[in-house]
Image (cartoon, rainbow, N blue to C red; front, side, top):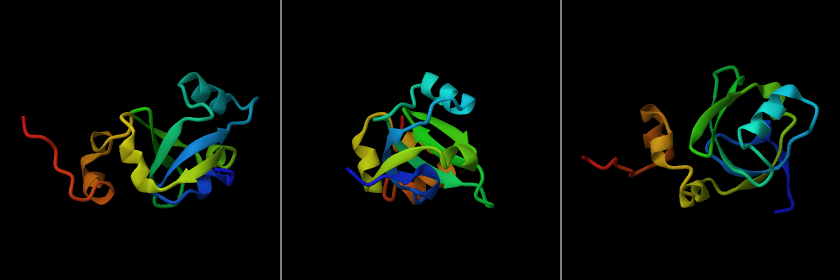
Amino acid sequence: MSTTVKLADLPTGHTAVIASLPSGVPSLTRLREMGVLPGTKILLVRRAPLGDPLEISVRGSLLSLRRQETELIEVHPEAWRAAFDYADITCYSFPSDLQDDLCPGWEPELR
């Protein structure tokens, strides 16, 4: 896991592990307070049509980040299917319009 890329360069639908967040940036400080720390697994869910903002899934929550912020965050990319090995990122985390694209063959349990 030695290769790092900027979160802004991660392809949509791929997972990564956060490698570093620079200090002294107020919006990134807030992300740290929310538990987005080095070693945290994230999934890049989607990008807005013009590329800003980006939506990520982290610890069961969906967050939108400005591209300017994602240019500062370094990540270690992983295979996108690995996201479903972690309990904090599930198909239920995604909006229903994305579930078919990101979770092929997945069906919600009927209750």
